[in-house]
Amino acid sequence: MDEVFGEDSAFYSKAEVYWKQVPPTVDGMLGGYGSISNVDINGSKKFMQKFLGEGQGKTGNGFALDCGAGIGRITKRLLLPLFRTVDLVDVTQEFLDQAKSYLGEDGKRVENYFCCGLQDFQPQPSRYDVIWIQWVIGHLTDEHLVEFLRRCQGGLKPGGLIIIKDNVAYDGVVPDEVDSSVCRDLPLVRKLAQQAGLGLVHEEQQLDFPEEIYQVWTLAYR
Ligand SMILES: C[S@@+](CC[C@H](N)C(=O)[O-])C[C@H]1O[C@@H](n2cnc3c(N)ncnc32)[C@H](O)[C@@H]1O
Image (tube, rainbow, N blue to C red; front, side):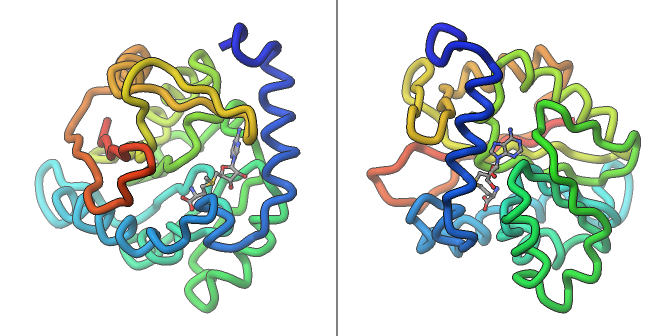
């Protein structure tokens, strides 16, 4: 990654500058593809239904963490309907400020708005039933992603899940100089999660997205 972007610090500061000038809207969160939000959320709901419920091995409905949450698009439509309490973490303070009004009445069940890069974020140990990480892993270097996922594992309750939902490249690593990120292929995402000591529970491709965008995969780990 250093070969692609130079020093880690420049990789992160360029991304911060990029996101600061993005409008705090659903369209802004999705790079102009606000129209895919419904399909995305419905696919995520269906994915989560497999794991939630009562009984042995099921995932609880107490606490969720939305990583790279932006204005809380996922918190509003997926996490607050499924979990009692949600925390948000994002590096862009303006998005978290907007989340406070965007989330409306249900936003009262958000306990924490953490303004922090995921490369520096330490989830509280054993707090979360679900840690949701969507469209943000490409903003972390390989090394920081592995370390972050390891810390996330420590943040899970028994039966808890780490969900990664993101673009995947067809082959190798594709840099994006505009927002200072990378898109990794699926074998690399799996390899980094494995290096973090995570065990794969389930994975599937999100269907019904426009043909011109990257494939999107959802992977559940614990
Ligand atoms: C493509 S948007 C996705 C937002 C949200 N996950 C969604 O799907 O609606 C990427 C988000 O990641 C945040 N971000 C970028 N780099 C980050 C980092 N190093 N740590 C935490 N958040 C970051 C941006 O501020 C932005 O809110």
